[in-house]
Length: 408
Image (cartoon, rainbow, N blue to C red; front, side):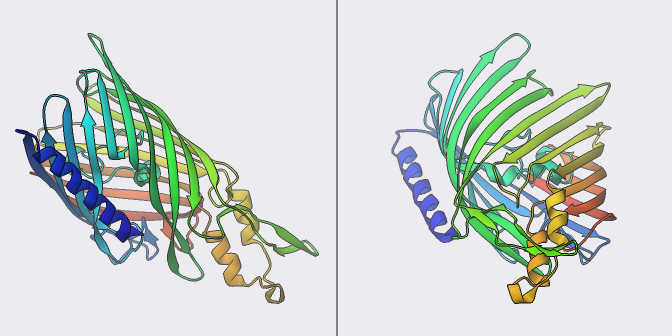
């Protein structure tokens, strides 16, 4: 599937480039960006796919190349290619086409884009892969775990209103993607990837003051149609055994589901500091393996010459811990096909989050296009966090990170 998608986008890219080069004259630019980063924790349980006490360069490192062309004042074309860990295999680094779109601006206050577009409502959604554009070593995963969900093939129409003090933009979008969802099974000690066709659309409202301040609110409605025959786990069932004991029954699956995602964010100067804060809520209909989840963070940074130290607090929690605890407490009955492996894997498959993190770090800017970053992060896991590959609860995990970020 990934190879077919890649071939399709390469073909689309070539067609668009042919369209551009057929024009009598056009302006174009080629730029690049990248992050070379390392991270290590004090725990053997892997965090955010790659971080453990052996250290890794996979979590943050990537290379990117972008081509921009402008036919005239109305028509433009952009394509972006990155080299990063695969979305469907933890052990593979692959090239991935990100933005590949045609843009049309009939007037200064309208913008129409078609192709592969990042449609999410996070403050740094558009520049997420360009590490030199922000000061944190990595954007808080409690919130930005959502970011990969919004690279859609579709259409975006944006209308802008300008006042003396503010620019206001309302962006409506509709798109489709084939997305890989990752699940880690604790007992089997295996990461498994499931693909699904995702259709989504929504509205994002952005207000800026032409300088540092930005305020954003948005909503996306999503339909998820899994490729796997068993579909989406809608409900766990249980069979009473007597004496207060029970075991797992046949789970209930559905072929598709719908969800709502809400975004709220702000970035503004305050007394010499730059404050950033974002919150998200993800509510998927009748999907017990992915119950309603809420997340947010607040960060304060201050520029001191070339240095920009920052302090960030982030938290995420799910409204599904009672079901998870009940699955964990089931009794294995091999004669009924319910083994301890099935119980442990069934519980760990749930996308449950109960964690909070403190991040203290700094960046050092050699120039606007080169930054060194360093960070110490303390994450406290409550009852469960699906960001960890393995059993971990009521523990603190320290992560130390360092990266070099550049653009050209």
